[in-house]
Length: 363
Image 1 (cartoon, rainbow, N blue to C red):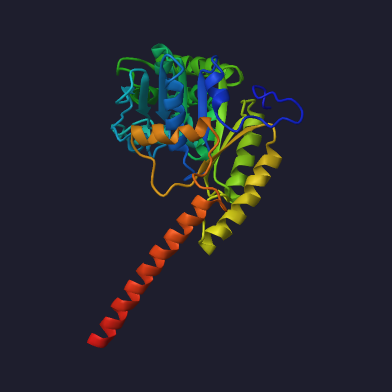
Image 2 (image 1 turned 45 degrees about the vertical axis):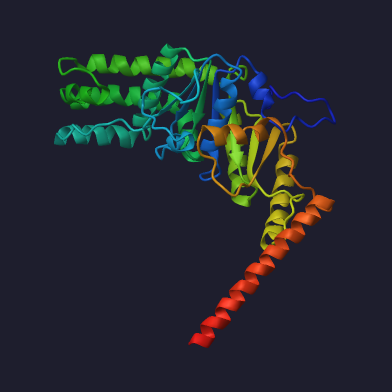
């Protein structure tokens, strides 16, 4: 499956995302994985890195809980907005649900529920088709999708089939509901004077757009999927499920980003952290065993969040160069730092003991 990551026997693929930056033909980059693993940070940093080598980059959040605005510390809307500090990086956040607040007619609600119950996800599919139409007219060099957690992402990849079903259901409902379809035109942004044929034509048009894009999604020269995970069982399981589904949809995937790794070389004294390192290492080894032909990038667990352009740019170095801890265990510098930390912890403990004793005496 990893067609763009051809490796000689015995050689491990480069543990960075350089392959994505070097693949000049790439047009669509999806970033996905389990909730809470750092997809938005990774998609933001990938878009920042791509902006340094490509003419124009658009990063789109399709997650209803938008975090792009938090990552860049700048407000984004459903229209592409230039990211502060860049001349060629744009961001937008789309709501995967079609707005239908104005549709209060009882018959209309019956029609809508009939349609959406028959084909779950048709509203998202149409919204996504509209967004793709918009993106195609803008002609960006590369588009990065910050997707919602895995289940939503897989629905997104099923949209061509969903719209096909939607069209069939529309034809069936046209006969059953007659004039109600005219009212339904509001749902698709058509004027009151337009009839159901115009609405069906619009659905056909969307299907054409999404099928055309779907062909591009299946072309490994144009599209790839980056799986983001953390070194834990549930995340490994979710990644395996995602990789299997991508293979089923014929979508290329050859990059895995393992986030929040605590490196063994770090000067760690906490028993809890040592236990976490041991547990993480087991899953990191399993990732390497399962995906030995993937580019696997390991990112360190940080003491703070990565927010703002400067923080994203600083952290981006670990995407293109394997992370190396500042101090290596057993060196003079590491031992000196460890003694310094222990002395500081001892002083704090003595001060606290002193306060507690004084408090008891006062009581």
